Image 1 (cartoon, one colour):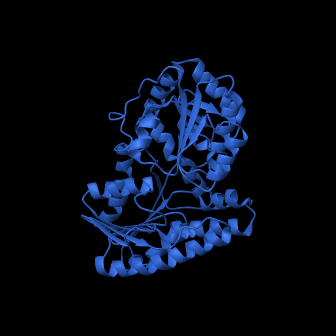
Image 2: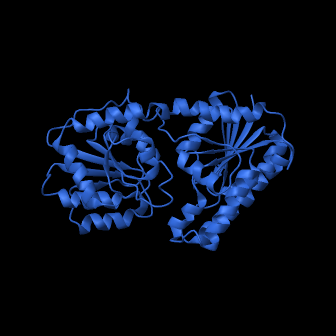
Image 3: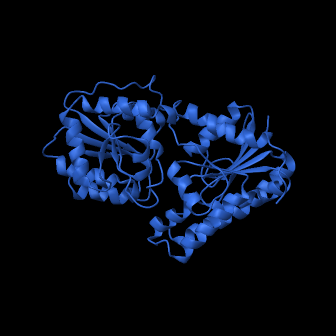
Length: 396
């Protein structure tokens, strides 16, 4: 049994990847401390058996580069102090830091100097994130600086993980020499359980498309609304349900009203419980992943894709490089990212052939078998435990 500290500048257990990783470590018999952000009303300290949660009350701000820098800097300073103090008391064997930002790995400085191993889980590529978030190109000084800090962060860690082969190749192309293990995102099958929520027969005259997750422009919910508007006369039974919350929510509501589809598109009142969400996903005619394509999202996978696959829900999928690398043409009803007319075409194809959706869903399930969490979990636990079993590293 080892003592492991997991650091993430987000909320826990809301982050699906971190939630799965922590559960895997606990199931393997380790003690885990999580250091994360605190929502209003959440306790600063929480104990759940061998799991301890310590929350830092730094507000998660979204905005310009200055707002991100301020938030990242405040959390890094607080996490560095707390991880150091917690290590003095607990003597961690491993500290795992989950990005963004890459520089958060330096919060493990004190434990690393005292012999702890450091794991860096690279959820995303920070230079590409900055480029797409703020409209910069690769020559921008901030982008070049982020590439330098990315490589320094990887060198600081004893082991690195990431989410797709495309991300690993990108890190290596910029100079990473340390081996990087790919642990794919996957659905939490205890929540998205196909045995508990099997695909159900739809009522006659119903063709509902569902979309869940954070509502932001780059997730493409507006593409769905525009496609519904294009099809509203041709397919009177077509409906859409959008579940989630985000900064684009009010603009999306205005777009729904502007295009005259408020009777066809239902926007949830914020986040909903899994008890409400999962049956809606399992019973839908199709799920939607409408990620818009850019340098950042060409490298990533979204969790919601795996949720639809495990529930056997046919999926309308926007084309991005990383998804096309893992899934073939028979896995999804593909459409061009950001193209409402092409999404409308894919919806018409599913609607016209009742057998097409189930056939795609079955094939996607077969293709995704090695990507399921019980396989990825073993890769993850082995990567962490190999550090625990290794000889004590030399202090930096």
